Length: 288
Image (tube, rainbow, N blue to C red):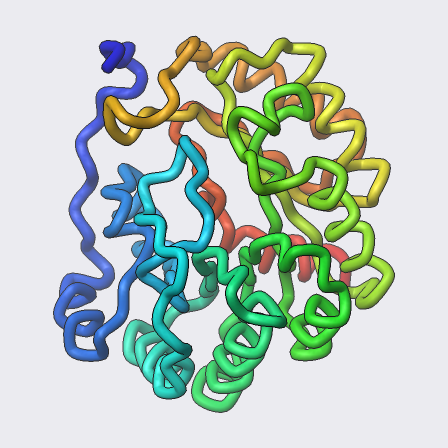
């Protein structure tokens, strides 16, 4: 794999606020994306009272060549105890903001929407002051299932665009660029009060103009929040990194994104979908 530049060589900070987080997660049989992906932002996010839980796994019905999650054509059935266990973890960790994401479950008629709804409802019961963000797959275009999720009233509906239109067939072969944009557009129609959010990886061969076009396309469907981060190759069997983008370029994209109307743009080499996710709480105060 390509040698990482100096700005990507960081040590994962110590978790101070939630020193017992691993024990709690192990006790409840849950996984966080933060730990599964060895995210360098783990300490910062936990200290800010944020965590990202992966549900309906561990197998994914898609085999995207950038992703390290295992492919499984026929994954296990849904665990009916998972939503309550997740809610108990949120309560015990005293999270201010929680992000719930999932593997793709194309084997399910609703893409797993019912499990998202159950998780939201259980969290509301145990931690009514915790804000909730759902980072969802494209549901194969099932907008009825999307409506079910939105009726549960998460504060943020996140769906990652992941890359530019030209690279979709290579990077996300079972996805569709237009369908991802339509999902965000439908979310706005179905619940105008939800914050919509998306994210892209860079360093896969896209151009500056293509990144700006993604921003324009997202703003055209009234997307509120955008994250931009460096793609890192999980293993030699995954897509290679074409370029390590400089911090200066990330800053320029962040400034451009704010200029074209995003309420929040988080654009740094180490940015991931949930990085600074808790700042939506401040956006809510401003808009209320």
